[in-house]
Image (cartoon, rainbow, N blue to C red; front, top):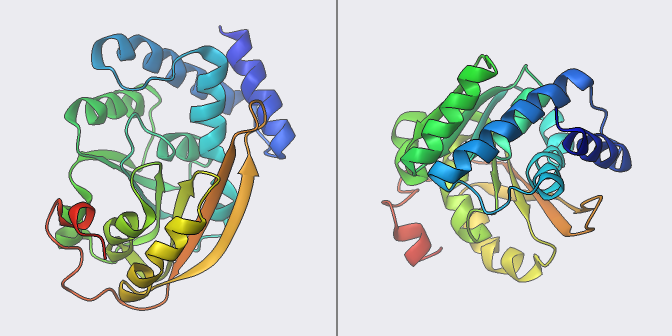
Length: 238
């Protein structure tokens, strides 16, 4: 039982106006303990200290919930999930979400699968894949794509928007200084069938670090030539 972890999650959510139950915090705590233990073997994250992990992994993931809760439909894909953030905390928070977690690093996918099994999460899968390759099987399949701190926005939209249904959304959690990224991504967003729907600034409740949550609506079909082959979006952004 880690009282400090529980108190941090509880108080942080209260400050942000996020309602949370003891049962959800119980699951977060099991997840955190698994992360702490597995990190010694797998090197999954540089953030393992109790308060920092509670805030920067779990509470930070829940800052996307307002945008997710507005989505019509439950099929969500988390691109570049790493050790499962933000997708797994969001799934634990709302069990109705049908969550697919994707990462290209096998040890991270294996860890996510262990968490899914331990917490008996249904309608939750972790896949080892590159985002650019997913569109072949899952083109315009998802109601929402989410991503946190994976790549520059103009690169991210080429990973994400081909996977999102027309009418769906891509929700990107970014840092506080987003203006230049938004300007650079404007052309890519339009080419790929997107339109910026909202930009919301959030401060984490303990260290006051800034976050920007960018929601892009899919307003038209993504041309078939996108995404380009693995590696190209990052080397030659649109």
